[in-house]
Image 1 (cartoon, rainbow, N blue to C red):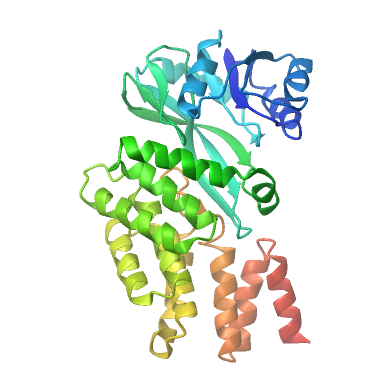
Image 2: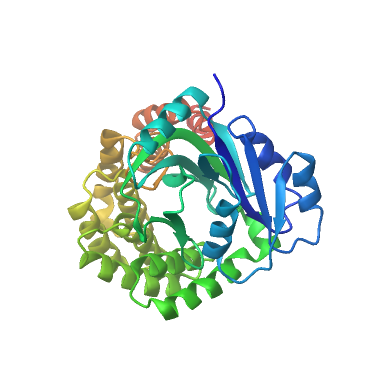
Length: 367
């Protein structure tokens, strides 16, 4: 089957280590590659051109939304796929993508989502659904200085279709954070945006989450709390679930366990099927070292297993919280209280998902 008429659009700067891999993973799906270079001093433009990309150079203006819009203006194919240089397409089906594009074209204001996996600084894999494919139509534009959002005629996207394209993001692993200072840059750009829109929950959330990744939990709590307050008063609540989850983990790190419990309860009030909240609760109970709450620990992780991993189409979730990670924590719990039989059972369940640490625990118990 012929390729969907897709233009890959990227904005880049000094991405010589990543650009070739990123483009090669996308070439199967696209007919055109548009690279907007904002001032590289390495071989990024030349490497992109060697793979057939059209490279356009523009001066950086501290505004990702403007750069995105410039890139999509250069596209000539009927659909656009947006990626960053530190992202790789790891799965997808061309015929299914073609059908999704056909459906999107019939619904003005619709767009296609991809499944985004991201290795967190804790070594977990978070999974979420994000809008990345849309018609090459001037009514679609990006808004925002950073963490820019796709809009249709100035309003949020009306509906989305899951294209089942899976993209892996590698940019925020520890090594790359130390090498690029991306997070410090992001904070500065987000705060510029906040001066213009001080009550926009999305910006507050992104600042809070960035501080969380930087392990500045005091600042993260401040901005996430403001985000949650605004989201609770909104009818949309676009970011409330992940904001409450991240805020809850802030409270754990800051040892504010009363606030943590209130945050958890508010979370399950609105999102009773969000497995990650119950997993967070179990982790918080462990970290609190509260003897009276100790008996609640297994119930939290059993609830995770009952629910299974949360839907990545509905929530941002960490892989395994409803399966191998919950079983592993139950194994630890039963090992601590001396119930070797149950400990081995849950470690084995976790091991069946490929958890090597669970295999080690079984060996320790049985030797």
